[in-house]
Length: 204
Image: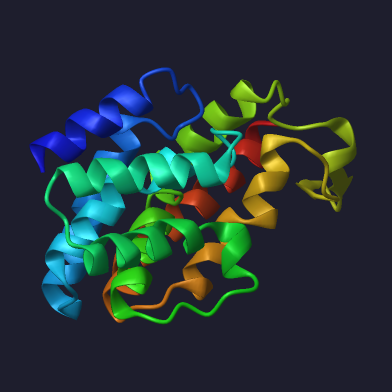
C-alpha cells in the first residue's frame, strides 16, 4: 500500500477542499473496519478506498484521462486486469450523485462507498463541509437559509451555502448506507451533527 499512498499524496497534494491524503487515509481506515466484518476482498477494497478521489470530477476536469492514468499506475504496480477493472468500477460509481441513480453491483463497492460516506459525518464531516465551502467561496449560511419562528431559529430553504449542504446531503447519509457495520459506526456521527446544528442555532 505504500506505493498507493505515495501516489495519492502526489496527486492530491494541492487539495484544499477536504479530499486530500488525510481524507483518503481516513476512508482507508473506515474501509478496513467495515471489511473486517463484511468480508469483502481486502486488496480491492483498501486500494479503491485510497485512490477514489484521484479521479473525482470535482477535482479533475478530464475524467477519462484520469481513469486511464490510474489504470496505468495500477498496472505498473502488478494489479491484474480483473482487479483494475473492479477498482475502476468502484471509484467511478461511489460518489453521492452517482448513488442517486446507480445500484452498486458488488459488496466491495458498497464497503468503499460506506467508508467514504462515513467521513462526511461527525466532526470530520463538519470540518470537511466547511473546507469544501471555503474552497468554493461559499458562506456558511445565508440570511435566507434561516427563519426565526416561535422564539427559535430553524433551517428555511436551500441555497449554495455550507449550511444547506447539511440538509441536502450530510443528514441524509445515514439512511443511505449499505452495510450494517457502517450504520453502527454512523449513528454517533450523525447525532453529533444534529448536536452541532442545534448549538449553532442556539448561538445565533
